[in-house]
Structures are given as C-alpha cells and as structure tokens.
Amino acid sequence: MSEQAARKQKQPRPAPRRLKGFRDIPAGPILAREQMIRTIREVYERYGFSPLETPALEYVDCLGKFLPEADQPDAGIFAFRDEDDEWVGLRYDLTAPLSRYVAANINELSTPFRRYQVGPVWRMDKPGPGRFREFTQFDFDSVGTASMIADAEACTIMADVLEALGIRRGDYVIRVNNRKVLNGVLERIGGQAGLDYGVQLNVLRTIDKLDKAGLAGVAELLSSGRKDESGAFIPGLGLAAGPIDRIMAYLGSGAPTRAAVLDALAAQVEGSEIGAQGVDELRQIDAFLAAGGYDESRVVFDPTVVRGLEYYTGPVFEGVLTFEISDDDGSPRQFGSVFGGGRYDGLVQRFLGREIPATGGSIGVDRLLAALLHLGAVRSEPAVARVLVTRLDKTMTGDYQRLAARLRAAGINTELYVGTQNIGKQFKYASDTGKIAVVVMGSDEAARGEVSIKDLRLGDELSREIGEDRKRWLEQQPAQLSAPLDGMVEAVRGILGRYSE
Image (cartoon, rainbow, N blue to C red):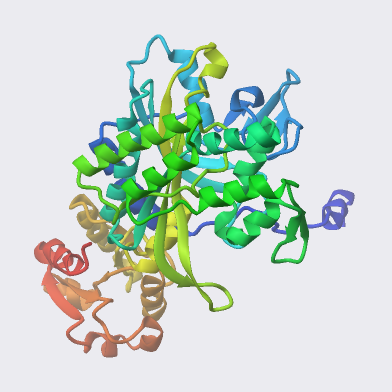
C-alpha cells in the first residue's frame, strides 16, 4: 500500500451530523408548503401588496436588539465578525431588514409602501419539539401610514388567508390588543411603584407567557417566581402586591364583545393619556372591522395579547387556531398561534431620526402548514411528477423516451423510470413516490399501437403484491385501461382529473 493510500485509510469518516435545532425537509412537506404559499400570496396581492426580497445576512446594528436577549452583540441571533471586523448576523425576522430597506430608499418609495416577503429566518432559541432555529415566515407590511385602517386590514387579511386555506370560521380567531393600553396601565402603576422602562419591558414579556404559564403562573412570575414544567425555578420580577393586582385586573378585562372590552379597558387606563390613545385606536379598528362584516366570530379584542418583540408601539394582533389536537401525552389542547404582528412606528426612525409609521403581520409558515396537514386542507405529496413511464424492454428505450416527451409536451409532469426493468420494483417505486398513473408498453402493446395505463389510486393492490407477475397485473380491472398512442395524453389527463384539487 502506498504512503498516500495509507494516509487516506487512516482519515476518520465524518459522521452525518445535523446542527441542533435544524432539520431536513423531504419533498412532501415542501410541495404542500408551496401550495399553501401560493394561496397566501394570492390573498396578499388581492389587497395590493407587492413582493420584496432582502438578504439573509445583515449588519447586527441594522437588525437592532429587539429579541429577549442578553447584552452581547450575538445573543439570540447567529452572528460573526466579517473581514472588516464588523458584526454580521442572520436575520431573526423579516421586519428589521425591511426597516433598513425603507430607510435606504425612502426618497424613491411611494408611500404607503406595501410589500410582502417569504423566506427563512434564524434565532438561537432553545430547540424543542416543533421549535426550530431555522423557520420560514411570510410577512406583509404597510410602511408610511399611521391610519388604523392598515392595522384593521392586517386582521381582515389574516382572516381571509385562513379561510382561503380551508380553515373554517369557529376554528380560528384573530386576537387584537394595543400596546398603548398596556403602557397606560403600567404608567398608572409606575406613578405609585416607580416602574422603570426595563421593568415595564419585563412585565410585557411575562404577560406574553400567559398561554404557557396561565394566569396563576403569570402572577407568580410577576412576584417571586415559579417552577416550570421541567422543575427548573424561574426567578420573578419581585413586584409588590398592589401593582400585581392592577396587572391581573387588566388581564381579566376580556368580554364577549369588542364594545364591552373597550369599555373595560377605558376604565383600566383612566387618567393615562397614552392609554386613552390606545383605546381610541382600538375603537377605530372596531369601526372598520364592523363595516367590513368581520364580527366577533372572526376578530376579538383581547387584553392578554402583547407580543414579545420590543419594537411594537401600538396595535398588536395574532391569529390563533382554536381546534383541539392531542399533546404527546394524549391530553387535548388548542393548536395555538400561527400568525402575529403589530404596529412599529419607531423602527425606521432608528436610521432616519424621524418617525415613519408602519404596521404589518407575519405568518409562521411551518406551524400553519402543520395545522393544514392535520386538518387535511393540504396534502403532503411525495412527488411533483404524477405519471411514470415504465421500461419493460431494453430494446425500446427510445420508444419510452418518446412517450414521456409526448406527455411532457402536453404539460403533464412525467418521469421516465431510469432504474431496474423489474416491473414489480417499478410499480413499488411509483407507489412510494406518489405517482397517480403508470404508463406501460411492451412489444405486444407496441405492435398494436397502444399503451396500457394503470390508475394506482384506483387499484386495490400495492406494487409489492404484484411482484414480477405482469400477467396478473394486466388482468386487474377497473384500475387499468388501454389507449391508442394518439389517445394516451387524453387518457392520462382523465385519470389525473379524478384527483385534481
């Protein structure tokens, strides 16, 4: 053995490892996701939004530090120093890059600037079941308008998207609140308890944990702390009983109608100018929703909605799927949030020094897709090509190529089988990869100028039961038909048409 060969032999083979919090996605979910994204895009464009793409990498100071994170440049995000020794990071959402784009192009943009964007984002969160460090968002935003019509439209857009995807009314709700209202509550508390901005921000983030911790858990986190599900102790904010009671009273201000919630919130912020502004903005949103026919069966006002990101300045909203699923332990729970957003009037201001009002929403594509697959609203199909042309005779390869080419020329996605000529393996492959129709032509069919076409979904037997017994396959009815070569395209279309969405 040569010295070079010996060195190669000694080199360890790399393990096929995958980064924690990341995943490989096979064809089926990808195709289902594309189907879902097409529907969402149609709704966004119906409202007048146009596409925009921004880079995955941004300077960290342009992204800003709006995640719940520690005080170092790369905390909460994936970041590194570039060749100029500047911090560069993968975007953690699509809104921060949008604000940079608007600031850089403000003189050329027509306002309101309305854009949509779909793409991956990255966060260095703790991974867990259904929680990944790379995930996809699909955003829409209106920049350059302070009108509450834009915020109300965010709610109607989300309702329209969910219904266009096949989610029925009653299986979802759009929940709306206003950060100014909560700021008004905290302002009243601050007058007697001296809450500084940092404490107020931590209160917001604590309330945002309500869905997981419950009201009692939030009260504990506002006070001395609590143990989470793993048994780990989470320190509390150490607020006194009076401020905690005021916050809990605010969280209990929900009511069956939007008008009743508005009255309850007005009482909670009495004497606070910022709180009164928030209530008035919600009244404007309510009027627009009512005029469009979006009642409480679709959009509600909910004081518990705060959203975790720091940059929200006014109305905030989230889309929640209310149907039940089973946890890993079998206990029922609601599916939960698949959409969130709100008004961020100060985000572009960081670059320009003047306020540029903006509002928008973001769909969690992966979570929404999981919901649609659960409901059967989209199918996880394993193949793009729904037709397979088999190869039975190695002397007829040119004929098979011409069959596949004829189907493709007719706009039918068709795969020519390139593996072994064993018919059983070919049918198993067709079944495993989600094919609907299989085209077969042997020497006998060729002599008659026709092909045999198998409808796999109509057939009773799976390919593994067929083996190499072609005669048995040919005897199966009604999943099989014969067609002349000139009629092959229409015959295949007829089979595919049975299963069109």
